Length: 299
Ligand SMILES: CC(C)(COP(=O)(O)OP(=O)(O)OC[C@H]1O[C@@H](n2cnc3c(N)ncnc32)[C@H](O)[C@@H]1OP(=O)(O)O)[C@@H](O)C(=O)NCCC(=O)NCCS
Image 1 (cartoon, helix red, strand yellow):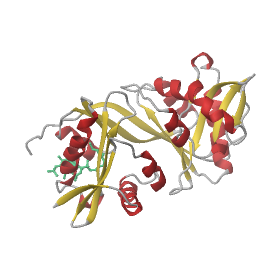
Image 2 (cartoon, helix red, strand yellow):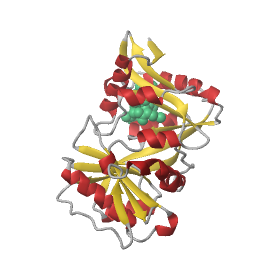
Image 3 (cartoon, protein in one colour):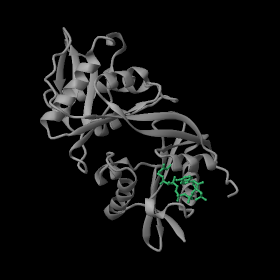
Image 4 (tube, helix red, strand yellow):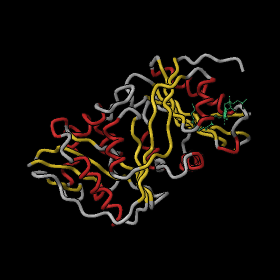
């Protein structure tokens, strides 16, 4: 019989990570420390077990996308198609109900998982595309006239002000199906993990752009782009390209062989910019939504 329980110990969080690493090879998975620090009232990080063996894991929480809950059932590949995902999904939706949102969102990165979501009353509302770029000899960057590019290793005091200047407005401007809101605390803790790979564009002392690489302890040769954003009045002047090239140059000098980035399907500007920088397309992640409470479908 499947049992679902809250993750509490480091061993539990490690088991949670193992399920995710098996399902999402090459993607950055939060560390045990991160997972602990994500916990907050109303969030549930669970393990699904059969006879004491972990077969899956899940999350029920508020979403960064405004106005919905986030539920994410995950069943390890060798335990799929046995009904466990269904039990886990309904439990996560029950756990999410007290948050008071009318809707739950989930992400599905492969056709089988999309089929699973559709079968349980979810519909597609958005897509994210992965863009991937091998790292070669990446030349040093010259910034556009009047613009200076600095790293947070050089100017650590600028990371917090960057939230108001380019972080919060950059997320709010994303071409997503719902507005994305990242708190100041999330910005501070999770949007940067390597100050030397986090770059700001300055005009005088004004912060006008940001781009970064997030490194991955599990896959040191692969890094993920964090938020790339330029203030509206400075767009179209080559600032985002210069910031991203600076990231690529840092990658080449620091043992990274591939970088990747997730972009909203309808974010033409960002996708085109990445294409021009030599990125090609990788995985697709489908955003699904369903009304809460989730009604059981006949099997
Ligand atoms: C989605 C997921 C949780 C399903 O877990 P599961 O334990 O296999 O789910 P169940 O056994 O309860 O349900 C399986 C049903 O989902 C659908 N399904 C799952 N995988 C499928 C596949 N590869 N092809 C077609 N349909 C599939 C089918 O309707 C299937 O029923 P069937 O086995 O009778 O044909 C699992 O595939 C997973 O962990 N995916 C990655 C994480 C993810 O995307 N989660 C969010 C999904 S909303």
